[in-house]
Amino acid sequence: MTIYDTSPHYGNGLSEVRLGTGLRRADRKKILISTKIGRVMETMPRPDAPRDETISPGFLGYFPHQPRFDYSYDGTMRSIEQSLLRMGLDRLDIVLIHDCDIWTHGAEKAPIRFKEAMDGAYRALDKLRNEKVISAIGVGVNESPTATKFAKAGDFDVTMLAGRYSLLVQNALDEFLPLAHEKKMGIMLAGVFNSGILATGAVPGARYDYAPASPEIMDRVRKIEAVCKAHGVSIRRAALQFSMSHPAVVSVVLGGVNPQEVRDNIVEGRERVPVGLWADLKAQGLLNPAAPTPSA
Image 1 (spheres, one colour):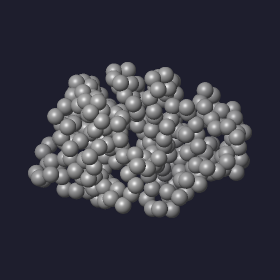
Image 2 (cartoon, rainbow, N blue to C red):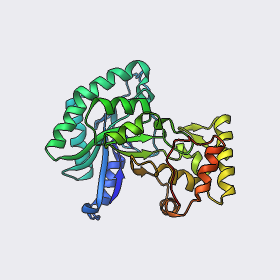
Image 3 (tube, rainbow, N blue to C red):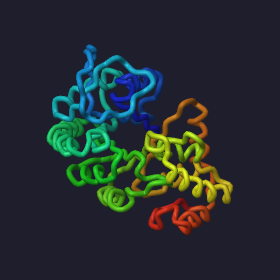
């Protein structure tokens, strides 16, 4: 099965419309559709009001809708209805509570949003799951502690975790991934290249976590690259295959600017990586010793 992940947030609905257009010529039985709730799109644009919440990065190309955060029961139902209409579907495979975290809302408001999501969005999604409108429900965040908090609070099938378990960062290994494995919660890993630096290497302008990489991150990546080079492996291949090796991970979510990047990801995911590479990374303190790694 192929998973296509989208969200109302991506292009203010444009991503869902484009995906829906493609689905009209696809075999729906071979595809899983994952989308998200947390932002409702007001389709009649209004002048922007002052906003004090943390705003996620923008997108190149978007509908002129007015997005607003809403993790309530009614807001979730409205968001699902909008997503079904945009994609021309009558059911969804996976729906995630999106960006209900400190990264998006700030430390003061994040606990308020969490309560709103558990009291409202979670109840709505659980109802739709019981009614078979949705097959699986989960959370999509950029923070391991927040993912852990949600995993302990509800009965979730999946979690999409972005950027917190990669060849460069493994802080999800301490608590969240063992908990997810114990609860049989499937993990969809996003951001496995940490916004690009694990795909490009430590080149000028390399990005990490949506911003230019710091000197410390650049230095660490150069050291990882040196080990990869010694084994004849690209850092991109090592990053991709490492991310797929944890037993809780059921999918990696990869984007592509063009079709060639998609083809390259497939190749890099299949080509052999010498097991000695992982041992060398651990020996040099560049990889958590407890991290599972691919076998030969």
